[in-house]
View 1 (cartoon, rainbow, N blue to C red):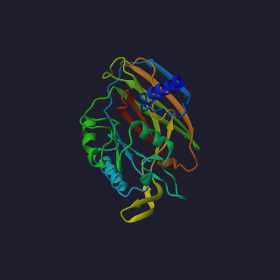
View 2 (cartoon, one colour):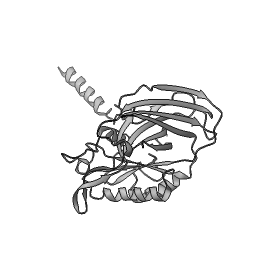
View 3 (tube, rainbow, N blue to C red):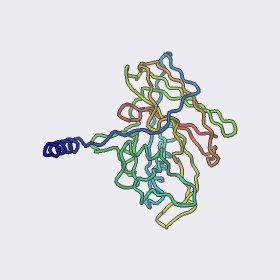
View 4 (cartoon, rainbow, N blue to C red):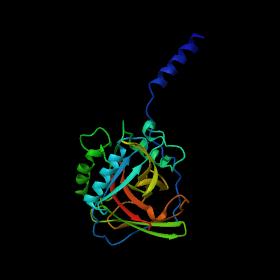
Length: 285
């Protein structure tokens, strides 16, 4: 009996010493592309680097409209071919800020939650990520909305190794998206990258808590709606060299509550550290 008690104590001690935070797991479902090819092409001239701001926001956050205005100001300063904005409404994270109101159009979704859990949740809102990068001197990737412009300017000075081209075809509510990724002469041979494709929507009228109380007619823009395949990125499996080209095509039946003319498709390419190396956006008008 003493031996059993002793062994049980040893096992319990070993288990308690092995506790650690498990890695984030992406539970989104991979989608098999309609078209999936890769080949080596002549090396293209590099595109300019674009930057993505991901605004972590919530409908019960009194200061979150200020962050939305800051994002709007940055877009006006930098133009739509320099900066892309995605508004992320996570579920079950900072619930006092993000818990949806009943009976109104919903913006929170599990896709947003996966992004925030994987990249690191903020202690409060409004906050966000700039190119998903952990900048020098920062303890995490969280960037206050008052600092977004400084880090956007820093990232715009970077060069990108990959060009992104997005095409779309719409028939009724059926959407086909084709992305073409071409590695230019900034590419480093052997780099491991992945891509993610998202749909965002502007002009969603829903309740928002503001400085003046609940506004039932608040207009939400850049709201993340959908991810093609893995939320945190689908792997690019071939060896990266200048001239490496990928072409991938996906199909999606747009839900009835999406206003197609208000929607945009965004493609980001990320490195192994989750940094966005380039991004492009097209509208669905």
